[in-house]
Length: 593
Image 1: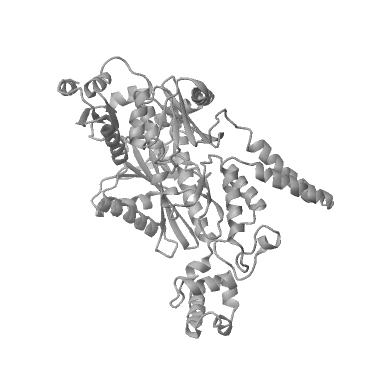
Image 2: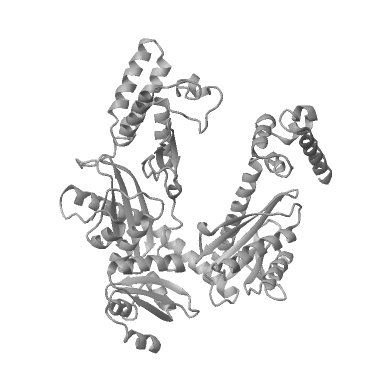
């Protein structure tokens, strides 16, 4: 504290960013302030509660950078958070990415659901959303596809598909369709997505009456259900705003050391959907809200035309950073909508507070218990590995990452193993080498602990590879009982067992981590298998490129059907020598099995 007090006396009261460090020199928190001296001093005087108290207890040093303006300090703060990933900062990277409805900008447009907006090649496509409820997005796309005969296929088939025969496509693949008709369809869909559903209602009502007159009551009932869906789902969330400006509304509520943030997505004078997040409050409310909103639109959200926020938010700073109007209304309808967002934030916190608090406490306690059991100085990042194969085929490994007791899904990694046989030790050596050679090469964040889902042999394999890379990272294994439940940790040199109490938080913590890495690895394994072993086999046969592979997959579908085929039959797609190579390869593979 004497060292910190001496440094505090030298800090100027100017705008800038500060970085809190623990005794290992790791940056654990990044913040910004208009007056650095005042803000930094506030951490070391008075009493703190909750997550702030935990942060302060770990601070061993701090650094600061003076900048010329608040905007510069916000940009620097966000860049430092991205770079160092401090454990006490609120991060959005593990938030969900919400889908948008896209009307493509092709000559004949298609409707689809997209998530990754940053990778969009066609910037002129019409996008509508976001949809936190993906079911609502799918229902809307299905509804429009049933009403409007758009193109459904990504590429043109040689003859009309089923959609043409049931009246949901005009047969663009084989027929010349008037561009004016296509433009009319496109304009109607855009009007609907912008909130004008009158055209579709009229169209459905007219068609429903026509079907009734034809005594086609089943079709008439189906059309009535579509009408009911539009009336109930698409009109129930109207807000009292006369304009049709797309805007996002942020609200918040603070209680018992937690900050609840609520976002309304208002599109075409309707609340399309909402998003909320509840986090421990560490910094000043104004700083946390401003930072959250600034980073919110980096998570694949399109910027709206306007943002409404509570009066506590720094609107001028956000306007300068986001380059769109940010307003804190003081009266009228817009003020009521912000208050409604605040009220929803309060309700969300009240409903979930106890669950969130208990989960936070149990996770922190379990992580701390694991640190003590393993006699470690710090335990912030854990990387777990699991292997999966089917009789030596489709060898894969999965790695999941836990940071401060919580899964960090953006850091998960999949590994397709080159070893084509059932060899757990060989698989472990390969995946550990590939992972940590990459960590060294790209200077990635290193874990404090590696957990392998195996026994002494796998621990030795992992340590052997780490030693060859001159990396000193603790490796432990998990021992299971006859019921396949974790019974002990395997660690040390020589390796010994540390019993785990089945009723402890640590036991459930390890079980959750094991379940997660197993789920992740098995899912990847199933994905590879679902593509069919045929596709991967064809990749190994010389003379079979992408085009020929596609034709073979289309005609034969499975390995067994190819093996049953003659060279003459295969030669309709492949050159005769390539057909012979393929059949020989399949026979040799069968012998190896």
